[in-house]
Image (cartoon, rainbow, N blue to C red; front, side, top):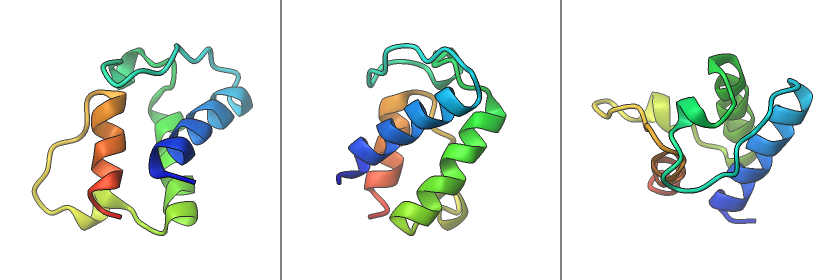
Length: 80
C-alpha cells in the first residue's frame, strides 16, 4: 500500500471512530477544514508511525507543519 493510500485510509478510519464528518479529501484541502480535530490528527500520526515505521514530525528538525492534505502526504512520502 502506498503512503497516500495508507494516510487516506487512516483519515477515514479515525473519522469513523471519532464520529467526525470527514470532508472529501483532496490535495488542496486544508487540514483544519478536513473535519478532523487536533486529537484525530494526533491519532493518525501515531498510527502512521506504527504502520509506515516513520514519524516525520520527530525526524524533521526544521520544517513547518503541513497545512493541506497534500502537504501532509508529501511530508510522509519524503521520509520513506
